[in-house]
Image (cartoon, rainbow, N blue to C red; front, side, top):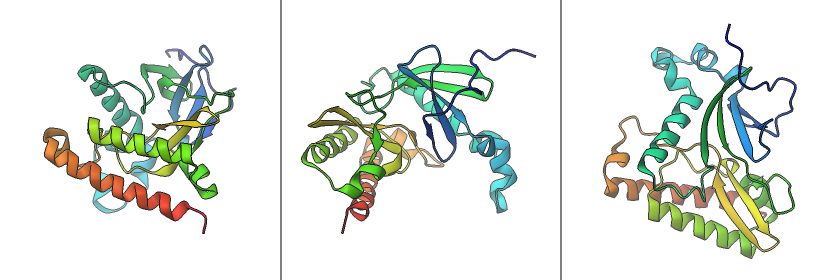
Length: 209
């Protein structure tokens, strides 16, 4: 049996999402390792799939495979500034399965950033509003495709008391079965606008009454 490159079992994840756990890289505190939760492996997800979905390919249930393909594409095209997406450093084998290695973001005071689902219920401050506007402008300029822009998948990195930078930490990539928006800019622009409209709605319903 091949020994894993990285051991994570004795470490505490700093974040647990819907499908994955996130660890500080034990050999580099500026990097993050994302692994699948045991209950969200492709095999586990297909086992509980209903109807025709249970006949889909195993990799169609694998968020690690999907995200890895997107990152490899971004590296190939070479136009990604990594300002709003964590920089990708490849994959490692861990004792909890394949790990995707990306840059780890921290606030200026060293703490872990909060996501928009955590921040917006307290209101959208001027600096946060500015960051949201800049983020949406970046989406329109780059035509960056993601799955739904969910507030809990977008962190607000505090650069100072008066400045934020939004970063998509999960849900990147084109969710279309036939990726028309990846082939045609006009389709991509329409799709981006639809996603931004839904994103704005999701933020509004989080605002305090």
